[in-house]
Image 1 (cartoon, rainbow, N blue to C red):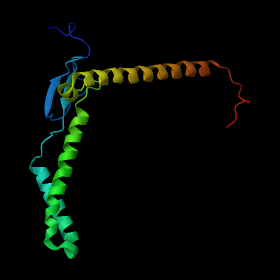
Image 2: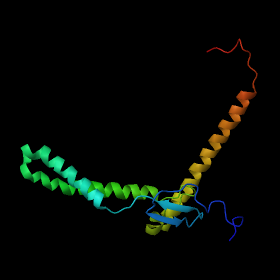
Image 3: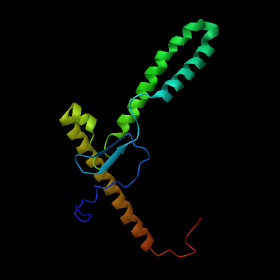
Length: 149
């Protein structure tokens, strides 16, 4: 396939450093990459351990060594944060397609894409109005004495 035959959105416009997952958007064909890994790694467990030690040290006058069980709360918070970050990166910024919603419910995914395009079209209309108004203002002739600062 030659470069001229390719659609303009097929090549990624930004090179991601060390992506966790690379794929093409099934709706628009844009090359995509997700950097966030939705699973905990060794570094995350080390961070959770340090936070648990700090919480246990702070709560030791009140709770003693029972503060060590805060590890499970910290673990749940880390899991939730990682999964939310991953879900935030999944939708395509070019067409609004979200593979996670498509896997759960096709109709909801279709509604999300329609909503994306409605918002995008209204944003384009607002930016066009702003452009037309700025052209009008720049074409007006102001006298130097009439402009007050």
